[in-house]
Image 1: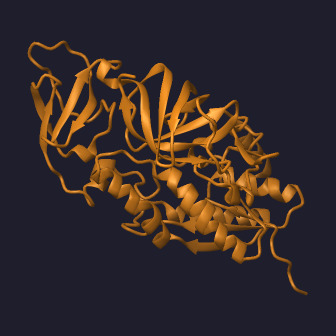
Image 2 (image 1 turned 30 degrees about the vertical axis):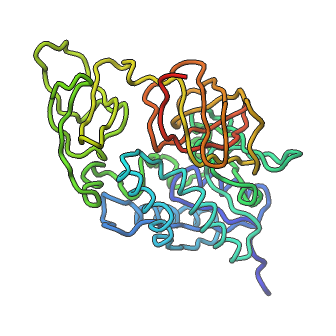
Image 3 (image 1 turned 90 degrees about the vertical axis):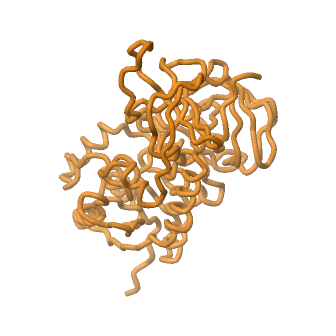
Length: 366
């Protein structure tokens, strides 16, 4: 007897979210198989990238649910499509968000192609997001659990990718997911959520980055040119950063925290200011490059909508006032703090995620 191919293949990470997503697919009567993806091999040692531990957890879940588990190595694809971009952005003194690119290039591209090759009709993940098929195509909406909503990281998906996607956790909160996992006796019910970027793991970020980018020390200065210390290289800092500046007490200055306000590559200076909402940290708008629209076409302008500049930031009212194929301009209803080049701005209308762009620079005047 020939075994029919699976209807859906779930990306099983070893975490509780994808485990419950797999269970929900099975409970709906679907034929389900799972794939564990390994995306990183460089310096793959215990304590840095927990791939071996995650694979063991994924195997235990697959055995408990009675589904077949495939393993696939996408390390080459990840290096070519995500990590090289990650490094190029840091070299350009921007702060990239590789998780956004990982979803569009690995989880919903390389993984999707692999799953279709196994005969599946769709892929599923443990993302907290909602998919709706509207009159104009597939729409991506925020999940019920606003705290865990991950549409920010899915904002560069397209219609073809969404047509093959499934997000079983759309209507669940994280506490409900963990409670269900405990009732089912899943071995990873209380496994802590992964944080940060997988290939960095638990190590210090700057130590990891130093393996790939040279250290180019220079002065840390106030906007007026007062030298306060020395930085290890502009690439190692991000706009709005407070920790790790190594600035002690400064004669004649009040004892208040310092924040990174700007980078001056021409003179290799790191500009810092005091006060979390110092004027140099605030932007009334921004310019962003590479706009991407989930519907496949840009919205009509001007467009009043909501946006967030980082995951879990409360949605901010804004107006999209200019747009072409390569760049867009946004004006905020309220000034925004620490607008960071390289990060994503993601746009929403109500619960619907429209798409996003990559921040190029903040604007301090209209």
